Each structure stands twice: as C-alpha cells, then as structure tokens.
Length: 300
Image (tube, rainbow, N blue to C red; front, side):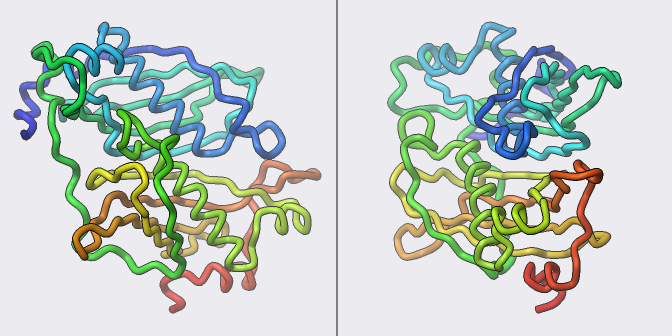
C-alpha cells in the first residue's frame, strides 16, 4: 500500500491549537525540561489535530484498523522549557500527507516565548489484529500507508555501540517500537556514550556545574522493530560547532535472517549549559580535553 498524491490531501493548511503542560518527570536538572519531553509535547500536539477532527488514535484503531504512527520528527529548541510553563501548541497540516508543522510557545513575565519549532510526519498504518477495518474518511485516506522512509545506504560509522532489548513499555499497538521509544534511546545512548568517554553527566555536574542541553534533534523510522527484538545502536560525534555544541548521529538496526535491517536513525545537536552561579543558563565553552574525549569524526 502506498500513499496517494500529495495534492490529494484535503487537510492541507488545516490548523489546530492545543493547550499542553510539560510532565514533571522531565525536569531532571533544576526545573528545566529535557529535550525528550519537548518531543513528547510535539507528538501530543499532532494527536490534538486528529482529535479535533474526531479521529483520535483510539477511534482510528478500533473502528478503522489503523495505527497512528509517528514516522519522523525534527525539532529546533530555541529556549528552555520550565516545569510550570503552560504551552500552546500550533499545528498546521502540510501539503505532503502526514506532514505537520508544529510550534510550541509559552507566556512568561518577559512576554511570549517560542520553545519549539518543528516538523513531524505521521502515517495511518493498517494493523492486522485490530478489531475493525471500516474505510477511513476521504480527508485522511492519503495518510494510509505501510511504507516507511527509505534508510540511508551508507549509515555513518559509530565509535560507540550499545545493544538493548525492545521492552513492551516502549511499544504501541501491542508490539511495535514507537517513535517515542527511539527518542528515549537517543537520550540514553548519549548518556552512555558520555559516560564511556569520561564525560558522565554527574561528573561534569559536580565538577563544573555543566548540564546537557539540546538545541536540535531528529528521529526517523525506516522499518518496524518489534517487542523483544535486540536493537544495536551506534553513536558518533560528527563535528564540534563554534566550540560550544557537538553534532552527533545515531543508527539503530535489528538482525533478521542473518542481515542487519536499519530501523531508525537520529541526529542531535548537543552542548552544555551552566547550571549554577552568575552564568547559569548560558552555554559552556568546550575545552580541548572535552573535545578530544568526544572524538569527533574529523579527528579520527
């Protein structure tokens, strides 16, 4: 099953405004939210677009046999998000079926602040064990597909590898590893990589008052991964930018029938913020020892 022409998507330009709150779970350092929870809010915003039209994921599954699946996200995070912020999400459907522009903003004493700009791509994927399969309304028909974005032919090599089992609590529709599961994996592989390189988060927090900060992140699914499969995740720093941020890539694959299948890729622009003292909230400059430990691709 493939998508119909983008020109046939009747939802183009339709918008939704959704009121959201960040989850307390994500306020790990001070009262700032980690990047993963920005992405969660963007996912919830897109779900709101569907719910406003009477087609939340529950109805799509139970009546139409379709799984609302996030295939891709790309977000820019221009400002911090505080645990008590009330977030207004603006979601606009794009011409390409399933593609949505998302903007998250909050209002503080200093005025309105945009905390996220991004794009998410979703699909309505047929589920073989769903209780019903009534035809989907014409407006949403172009979103129905079982194809995923093509995987890169030559995935970037990784200097760090981590293998993990897909747990049920990372899955949706009973056994499919969800987009949010890969966002979690991106966060965890960074943490594991930094620990391996002698740059563990608690070490830098205690010694320098540095905490991780992310200004850009992207995740793209390329093939389904299933509950209990083993995922091999590699991670590598590609470049250090302006002495304050490093650009890194993630590659995830599962082994089937003797060959590795790429299931997801990711990218993250990462640095450190100073968490205490008069410079709290500003970016830390990466010294030579830190850059050497990160081992960017240009130095190999």
